[in-house]
Amino acid sequence: MDATEIEKCIDDFGTDIYRFCLKLCADKTDAEDLYQQTFLKALETEWTLDWKRNPKALFFSLAYNLWKSDRRKQARRNMIAPCSNFDDETETVLHSEENIEQGYLQKELAQEVRQIIQTLPERFQVPLILFYLSDCPIEQIAAIIKKPPGTVKSRLFKGRSLIKKRLEDTGYER
Image 1 (cartoon, rainbow, N blue to C red):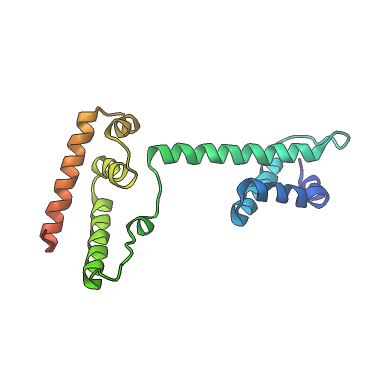
Image 2: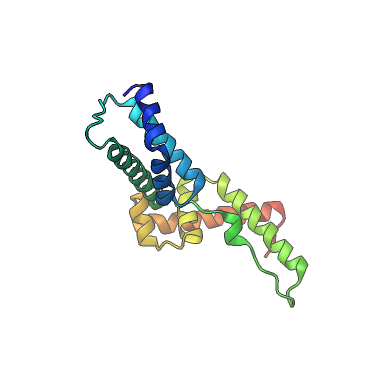
């Protein structure tokens, strides 16, 4: 397809494709990205558009396939190393009977542990994140990183030891 055909398609049924992308993604920014990717992909391919048949369906299927491919990619990435916002997970709600200073120190400690985990080698970092932040069992971690469960246990132990040692070096005590 050339740019003039793409421009004609955008004029003719671009809003329908955008609405479809919006329904698929349920998020405006993701829908805009998918919409742009759809027409960019059509521009990159060497198809000839048959206007007697339904060209709109071609763009709907292209958008759907790009969306499905992106979802699969995200699922694979989440299986390997789930992404999460550490701040949301470690956010603690202070009750009226809790000490504000204790809550602050707990948040500070959690931040320090996150920074330490980020500096650890990947072989310790991945099992620690999967075990403690994603609540994955040891067998599942072993399958993800393709190592025996004993190796996972040993890396968890070594990772905890490294965290404890670095915390003690910075002045934290139990």
